[in-house]
Image (cartoon, rainbow, N blue to C red):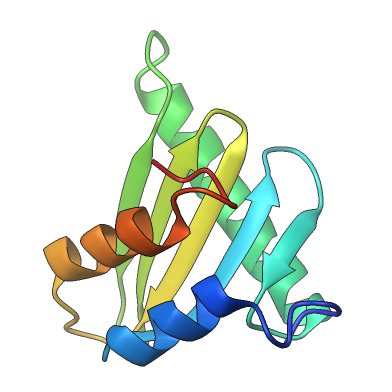
Length: 116
């Protein structure tokens, strides 16, 4: 767990109720990780990859800002949700149900992490 986040109720609940989600990272665009269920170095790497994904998506549609991204690989499914400058990333089992993971992110991280 990220320092200071070992008992974070929102993360614990998300990981408990979502059978597919393996990890969650919250960060500010262009900034540092604010919370994660991963060790700090892994969380920073995930945040950097998500930041690059968002930047690329923004280049593809220059008049719009990406608010939600999904990427699917053999090893994991990745969900990126933004709310202003706050970004939440969920890493899920391959073949996860996108709608359920997105719903869990919105439902369980609204409030303290402002991911609406």
